[in-house]
Length: 66
Image 1 (spheres, rainbow, N blue to C red):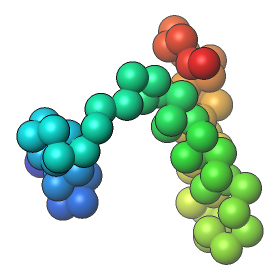
Image 2 (cartoon, helix red, strand yellow; image 1 turned 180 degrees about the vertical axis):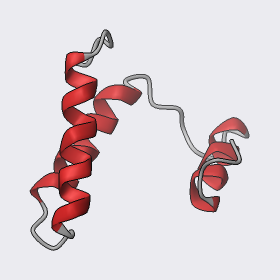
Image 3 (cartoon, rainbow, N blue to C red; image 1 turned 90 degrees about the vertical axis):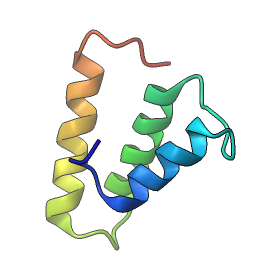
Image 4 (cartoon, one colour; image 1 turned 180 degrees about the horizontal axis):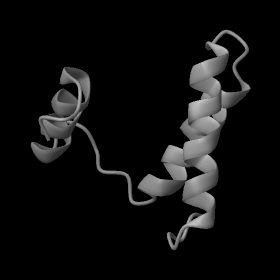
C-alpha cells in the first residue's frame, strides 16, 4: 500500500471503514476513468498515452471487464 500516493491510501481507508461505498465493478470503473483521462485534451499527452497503454493492457488481460 505504501507504493501509492496519500490520496489513494486515504480513499482505501474510507472504503475499508464504510465511509465510502465499495464498487462491485472496479475494473469497469477503472476503464471508464482511464478512457476519460485519454479523451481529455487538457491532460498532458504523455499521461494520456500512459493511460491508453494501461487501458489496452487491461482489455487484453484475463480480467472480465464489463
